[in-house]
Every structure is written in structure tokens, then in C-alpha cells.
Image (tube, rainbow, N blue to C red; front, side):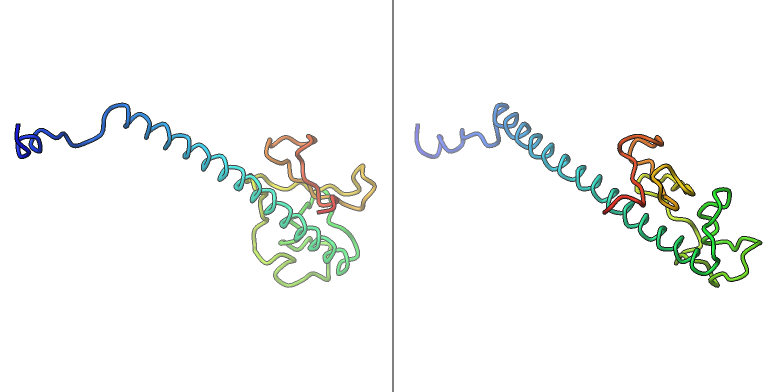
Length: 145
């Protein structure tokens, strides 16, 4: 066989073993990336919720300073964006920068409690990732962030 004939018989491409090895490596790398991204998303939801809790707590305190009382539990946080009928001094446009109440990082409503068991004057609660009230993953405005 001459050199020209050998060159014609050279096969191009990958073997099945090489393809399988590449797929396994790509799969492992994808798994690592997905787990890192998922943990960052969870952390971002917690950070967003904590920021919203601080903002809402500050707005409730401002409401108290101007009106002389905290929002009643039946009014809840809506008193921050809609003027209660018995409140004469009220911030024009409300106490929040938006006309809607923010949601927590898991798209749940915040829960407003007046004089909760903690002994504080009020608390604002996020039900956390599980969406159930009163579990360990709940976030409260009274927690030190």
C-alpha cells in the first residue's frame, strides 16, 4: 500500500466511547452549574424578602408617627397605601413607593400582626419557602438582619 492509499482509508470522527465520555463530562459540569445557580436563586429570594420586610417595617413606623397609631390588624398593610377613614394626617400617595403591596421572594403576601407574642408592637411575617405560617423558615421584621 502506498501512502496515498493509506490516506484515503483514514476515518474521521469520534468513536462511541469518546462520545459517551464527552456526554458524561458535560452532564457532570451541567449538574454543578445548576446546583450553584439554584442556591444563588434561593439566597436572592431571602435577601429580597428581608429588604421588603425592612421597608414595610419602616413604613409602618412612619404611619405610626404621623397618625398616632399602628395600622389595625383588619386594615393590615393596606393602610400604608390606602388612607383609613379615621386617619386625618396621612402621607399623600401613601407610605410606600408603589401603589401595590410588595410580595415576598416566593410571591406570597406578607402577614401583619399587631402586638404579637414576641412582645414587640408589631411584626410583619413572610411564610418563607414552604408557604406555611409558623414554621422555622418564616422571616420576621422583628428578626435582626
